[in-house]
Length: 323
Ligand code: UDP
Ligand code: MG
Image (cartoon, rainbow, N blue to C red):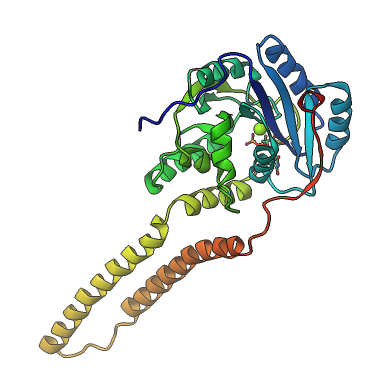
């Protein structure tokens, strides 16, 4: 695990902040203000690359205005809403900097952490991820499901994914180059960050409640997200069907033997309806479940084989700073 450390510039260098935004007009001004407050004192040339993920409110107009007023603001406008993972991918594909920080716009990821990330990057780490110490302002149910999900992922998957870690992180130039090579459509980014390897470290923070606007997550989305994560990084569920099948077959074999012996010794007793019904229903259920598991993987293979682009760009407006 002793990968060679990356070599960031000794001082200075260029930093780009990638921020996916979807209907976020309410928080963008506050976000830029906080960011300026933190980064204007840092000895680094920085800019922000917003990725407008098909917003239907005034987000794009705001970005256009900011782009004209603030030399540090650039943006990519996607052709429609592709989802956060694809929006981040667009940002990673089109950025050009020595270090990149990915963060949410709603100030749940505190910009104050960036200087600490930068210093770890200067220490030679390629990926510096922010790990939540506490989750403020989130329901007990969301906390519990998130916790359960990370545990399950780390049990099933082959690559350990750091717990309580979101997308908020710094990536070195070579980490970004590595991520660009992973073109799968089913993008479970947290898994992809872990997959690339390289020296990685974490910094701790407290996750704050959203500053304004609404979370775009609901349980339907979370479920799909969890399914994407598991199917992208583990084939254990597929093998699970095999084990259950084997177990049931073994049980059926033993049970069959018992019935045969019983019939030989005592003759046949016709009434067997309850046990017959139970077995049929049980096996039917297991078979449907196994089919469902196969379907989850097959559906994803289907979308991979179509080889569609991950996103489409409508327009790009670089920050004056990056021209
Ligand atoms: N986001 C996006 N596309 C989407 C949904 C969300 O780019 O389809 C962005 C959103 O604007 C925000 C970030 O992803 O900057 C996190 O979204 P949100 O706060 O809704 O998620 P949560 O923090 O509740 O997990
Ligand atoms: Mg949020």
